[in-house]
Image (cartoon, rainbow, N blue to C red; front, side):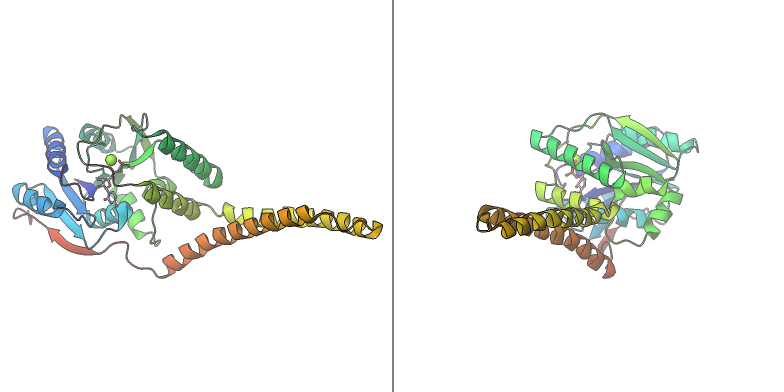
Length: 310
Ligand code: UDP
Ligand code: MG
């Protein structure tokens, strides 16, 4: 009935605990489920552990990607491989409590919702800089694209209908968190408390988060490009005024002053030009990457237990 998709990168410390906790929670409620671990190119012994637990449990399956494709790629590998009536995506570090996953399933069973989104009651513990960065990013995203994602996470349940739509979307560079809302299916929001990691450390450093932020804004908004045009217009108006002023001074014979102004203007225009080119560059890079239409992920191996074929 339900596939629980768990993308993992170097989670050797926690994977067994997670598998046990999730299995327990779903067995307790007599829910028909399978647990699909996607190894997103781990370099520790995560895959060995997955192979081991797959042999020990009839509920667990594993897919190993050929390298690290990022959490997005891993999630889509999971979505493509689920044939059940719904899927639940959760993290491998138990920050997404299995009990909440069970609750999501119960909401889906009522038949009223095709998407159940878990919403963080509070953000997890993080440094002041991270908090500030997140706040800035979410408000920029909201202003530029109208998508409100604050307190959203990748912890979601999706009906098969939604999964079919998502996996058929042609874009190669996905932003899962926003794509589900974009589909417009009836959604239930379920508040939850983010737990602490059971072990290991976060796999997202500042650089990875920054790239994700730029990427997602460029995916969902073309406003920055219009911003470039707007700055151009402002500067045109400004230059007409400055031209008139300069000519006037020239005719009066005071035209030697104003060296500082020239330098300041040069610096300002140079800076804005480069920023604008960079902004356009981000979009061109996105177009280029999409047009290559390479696969979102590559599968190296699968682990299925001897019970499969049931
Ligand atoms: N993850 C992944 N590929 C990546 C980065 C992370 O599959 O490139 C997985 C990771 O193993 C974990 C989940 O995505 O199961 C969430 O990552 P993490 O807990 O490190 O993120 P945080 O909770 O700190 O935002
Ligand atoms: Mg985590």
